[in-house]
Amino acid sequence: MTGAKKLLLASLALGFIGGYVDTVGFVALFGLFTAHVTGNFVLIGAELSRASANSVLLKLLVFPTFIAAVALARLVALRCERTKTVASRPLLVMQTVLLLVALVCSVPAGAALAPDAPWAMATGLFMTAAMGVQNAAGRLAWPALTPTTVMTGNVTQVVIDSVDLLRGAAGPEVRDRLKRFIWPVVAFAIGALSGAFAYAGWKFWSLLLPLVMLVGLVVMDVRSDHKA
Image (cartoon, rainbow, N blue to C red; front, side, top):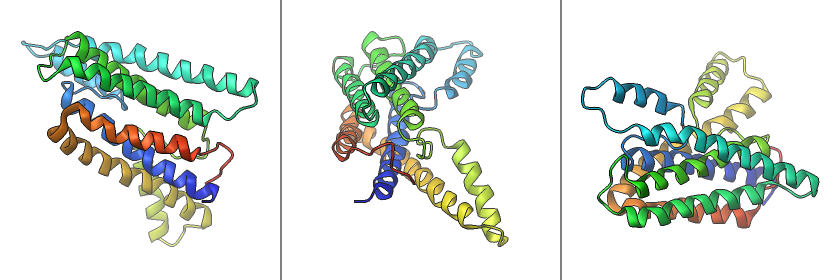
């Protein structure tokens, strides 16, 4: 498989994982965004405005957790630079381990979840840390990779390029960019739908699917020098 094809496959897989994990967290953990963490600002405001507000501690803790995960990913990437090794595989392994720990924490959490229950909070925070690493890896390990966790910018670019394509003003660069941006959006949407149905059927065991996909990406070893 060529480098470009590997990068496209990684973009699709990570886009799917981004939508899938974000939806599992939202459905299971009282509206928690684990990938699109800034969305929690809206939810915090909505909760605090209600007379019978639920605990917002978990949503508040995701911000330092996300920051810590990104900072740790940066340190790992810097160490890889010093040792002249590729950062993509270590970062994927880190994300896999964090998501696996989230799954382990979900077992004692059980079905009786509450917004401030310790094991439920641990599950959400480790899911957030895993997605923080994915956010960081897109910048640190694969500079040519389209963003795979927050789709607003991707959708905006797809619409702009589609308009240019329809009016006959799209050159090769625009066409190439449209191909790169549209597939992660599609994969994210499919992942979000799949995550909702998977959690309904298998609860947190649904996280096994993205874990298997991450292991597959680790084995495939998409290198940062592969260009789209």
